[in-house]
Each structure stands twice: as structure tokens, then as C-alpha cells.
Amino acid sequence: MLLSPACASFDQYGNFEIRGDAFRALVNALPRPRRLSRRQTRARKNRDCVPAMVKKEAMSEVTFNYSIRSELPFDSESPASIGAKFVETLDALSRVDPTVFTNWKVTDIPALTSQPLAVARSHIAEIVENNVSRDDLSEPEPEYGGYWAFAFADKVVESRRVHLRVQTGGKSERTTLLQTGDWKGLPDPAIVTYPIFRSALLAINAIWPPVWACAYAFKVDYFEVPLAPGAPLFPHTRFHIPWMGYLPASPTKPFVLPPPEIMTEGTPDGGLLMIATEDRLDPTNPEHLRRARIIAETMIAATGYASP
Image 1 (cartoon, rainbow, N blue to C red):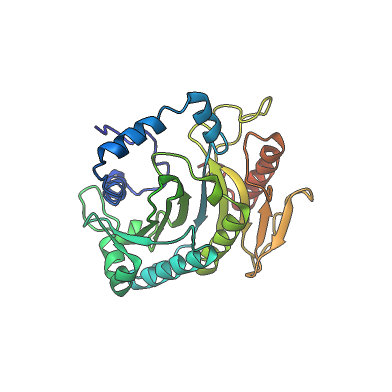
Image 2: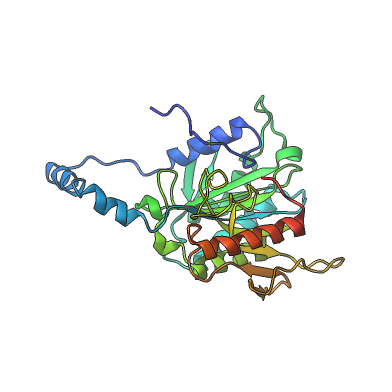
């Protein structure tokens, strides 16, 4: 029995009903469990008898969730425009790595259904229009919350699930969010790599030019307990624990640059990408954490966002 998702939404949803609709849609889209034969049941029981120490060691490689998030400028886009760009984004991600970003399914929140991308393409504008933001009385309010687009890469193994969410077209939240793993567990280390995350971040930025973007590590209490021995508490910001931070070029002011020790590169659109490490970001690694803090401080200085 599920009583509560047991975590805060922070600034991800316009209101509790939208959050609930999204949660139901994602749960409804999970693969239905199939009945196991007696032989399969015995095999599963034997598998679950692996010593606890071995299981702990196997899971210790990744202890954070990893995502890519961007904030979009204000733009009153239509459902048709949002839908076309959303499909373009799914296709671009599939080109980044077809073994990770594959078997996309697009979610229609009010209908609580998900359709393969091949089916959804022809009526993506209708799906996005159905996913309009609603107020607490369930009345549409696109001028405030805009529209939502949801999709997930349908995988049997939950740790290889990937979710993409875009909210735009309104005055409040205007974001893209790519999440790895599943709500039940942490992501597979094989899909959390620097080449995949860097390419995915740049692919999303090319279609949805952002005010800022970052790839980051996250866990609920990252700002409440030291992440490495002797390390000060990490600041609680919307950039979380940044692995990579992106800032677009500005015609009116120069880049806020990090110290020379932080790797940087220019992006095809003239922006700046800051990189904490070309390995997987490990927030328990003191050097990774120190560099992530510098990027967070640089993002705060450039954007003015010192809070989540």
C-alpha cells in the first residue's frame, strides 16, 4: 500500500494535483508483473539468498541519482510547437546512444496511458494539449503553468530507465529534466558516463536553448550531512551537486568564469560548459566534491539563484 511518495517535489510541479497525475501516469506505465512458474520462483528465491555483504558491495558503485536539468526562458509556445520539439529531443537522444535512449513511450497524463513514440508522433500536439497545467480546481491554466510533455525509455531493468520531462509555455516553471534510474532504485553505472551525459546535455540545449543547464548528482540529504570526511555541508541550490554546468553566451555581459583549475569548453552555440571531472562524478570523492562546489558557486554568481 502506497501512502505517500515520501519526498518533496521542490519546484518540479505546479501543484499537488499535477504531481499526483504525473506519479499515477508513471506507475501505470510500469511493466505489468507476469506470473512465474515454480522453477522461476525457486530460481528467484535462490538468487535472493546472496549474502548481504555481496549485495552491498555490488550496489556501492552508485549511491546517487544523476540527472540533467535546464531552465528555459519565458516563451508562450503552442502545444504543437512544444510537441514537435519534444519529439525532436527524443530522436536526438536516441542518436546519442541508441542502447540507452530507446523504446521511448510518451505519456498522456489525463488518460493515464503511454504510447510508443512511433504511435504518438502523429498526434503529439494533442497529447501535449491534454497535458495542460491545471489549477487546484482542475481548470486549465496554460498561461500560468504551461504544458507538460513526458516520455520514458521503456526498459525491463528499472536501473536503466530514463525519463524526460519538459514543462514550458507558461509563466511559472519552464524546465527540462532528464532523469536516469527508476523511482524504486539507483541508476545502472553503465548509463551514467561522462560521454553520454555531456552529449545528452548538449543535444537538449540545441533544441531548448536554456537560461542555464547542468548535469548533477542528487540524493535527498546531500545538503544536510557531509558528503566526504571533513567536508563542509554542500550548498542547497537548484544546481544540486553539479557535474557539468552550462551558461549561454550573453550579448550584454561577459561570462562569469570559474578558476582555471576547472575544465571548460566552448559549445557550438557559443556557450560555456564547466566540467568537474571526465569520470563519473562521485560526491564522496573530496576532489570531485571540491570542484562541484566551485561550479555551483560559479552558477550562483552567474544566475543569481542561491536557493532551490
